[in-house]
Amino acid sequence: MRSVVASSHSEACLWAAQLVGRAVRDKPACALGLAAGETPRLMYAELVRMHRESGLSFAQATAFALDEYVGVAPADPASFSFFLHRNLLGQVDFAPHNIYLIDALTRDVNAECARYERQIAACGGIDLLILGLGQNGHIGFNEPGTSFVQGVHRVGLTQATIAANARHFADPSQVPRFAISLGIRNILEAKKILLLVSGKNKSEVLRLALCGSVDPRVPASVLQTHPDVTLVADHEAASLL
Ligand code: F6R
Image 1: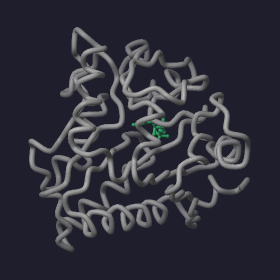
Image 2: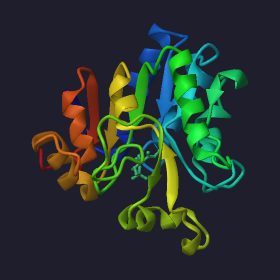
Image 3: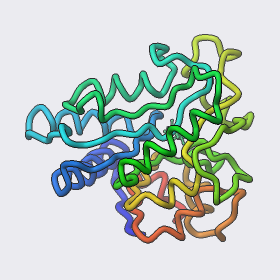
């Protein structure tokens, strides 16, 4: 695993955006897997800036959302689809037919998972997957205790994740209990992974993930088994490494 430790969250996001920009320039028709959440927000802002000011083009690239809440409409500001549209997809030049989001309003979650899995395969897999890290060690919505061999699947969110995400909902009681997420198998199948982590509150779990044993109780620890992971962390998140 390669590591970049930046002096601040914003510097980490600039580094991460450089890495993504390089991947897109090297392979314009690349498939990107995209995390939502607070951590990558500035990275996406920098990619938008690079698009507007430095000619970085996503016109041939493909985007896959990493996960989505079940039952939350794409027009709902709390949905990950909304987040990705507002922060990246709607701000740069992705072709609409190359944007793949999870249909969280589906009546048949299993069929939706299978459809999404087929779409990833049909695109030849994900070239660069951008991940954040949950305080409980989740990646995507693969919560502690997750299977390492699962593909796209429905997840029951833990109380810790529900509490952490309540801030995105006007009414905290409205935080969904379920999500659809790429599974650990899909994550490991990505050709390259960028793990972006910021903040003191992630330092202990980052240490467990990278320095502890590979253990489903810390889902991110599975990244130790992937051949091409780059960690970009601010110094607070990396302080216990
Ligand atoms: C988001 C996702 C989650 C987040 C993680 C960290 O698509 O899959 O794993 O990356 O919960 O969230 P933030 O960045 O909000 O701390």
